[in-house]
Image 1 (cartoon, rainbow, N blue to C red):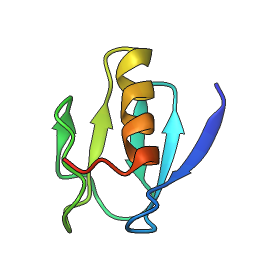
Image 2 (image 1 turned 90 degrees about the horizontal axis):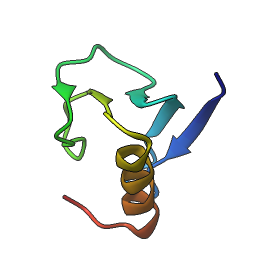
Image 3 (image 1 turned 135 degrees about the vertical axis):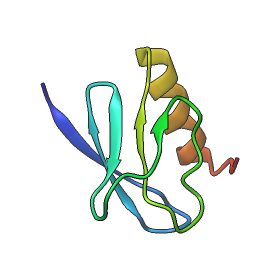
Length: 67
């Protein structure tokens, strides 16, 4: 399965995208689930249930909509 890198244009943080999970490059995951909250100092692993969930998140990050 192909792995790609995605960079949050606001924070400069890089995420590894592999299948339906997104993982910050550094640190230990402290959150796991569908609700996405990566804007603070906490490092997180987020599992997406569907490709649409992942695509929606990438689109949100691209257009800079913060949650």
